[in-house]
Structures are given as structure tokens and as C-alpha cells.
Image (cartoon, rainbow, N blue to C red; front, side, top):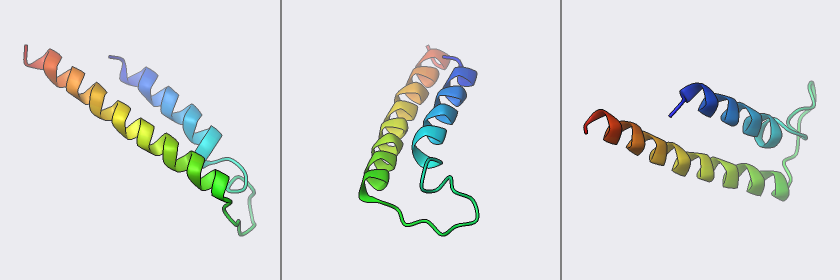
Length: 64
């Protein structure tokens, strides 16, 4: 129930999967590989599901 922890978790995942190679290379046009796309998509889906569950918990706690 700590948004600061959630933000840090998302930051770490973003650096590891979304802002990783080949996107990390500055000044170049990157071709995204299938592995990059698949990993980034899977993490995004997982984070969206986790966000929904966390939101449900926050709302349940607020309206008890």
C-alpha cells in the first residue's frame, strides 16, 4: 500500500526492459528485436494487472 515502493519497482522494471538495449544506445536508430518486444510487452501487461489489483485494494480500504 505504498505508492513510493510501487514507483521504485516500476522504475527498475522500466530500466531493465523498456529502456534497455537496443533503445539505450543514444544517437542511433534502433531495430527492436522480437525478444525485446516480447519482454517489454509481458512486463507492461503484468504491471497493468498489478496496478489494477493495487487500485482495487486502495479503493476497498477507502470505502470499508
